[in-house]
Image 1: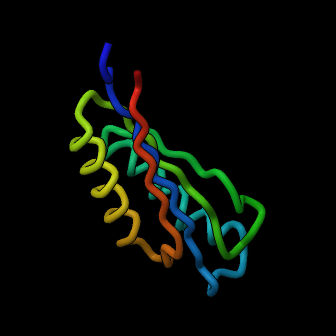
Image 2: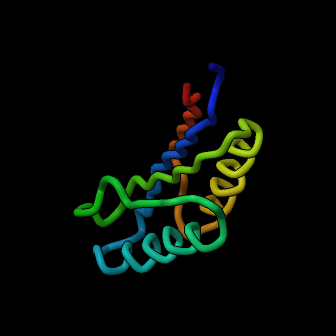
Length: 99
């Protein structure tokens, strides 16, 4: 049996050194996570840095039987996030085959 499909994960570290409160940071990060889920066929979540006021890590996940589609969807999601009001300082992409 060959490859059934692919799971793609995009993990991004967002930094906002000018932000001074958790409330202010949340007002920048939470809407982009929600918009990702509406605009793209992905799920997205805030993973780390929830108690820090100046940085956060978010992840985006998608699945398909088409490797190129997974790759393109994650690239579009990364570009969407990069257009936000913060700095993307690290980006990791992992696409795993489902056997």
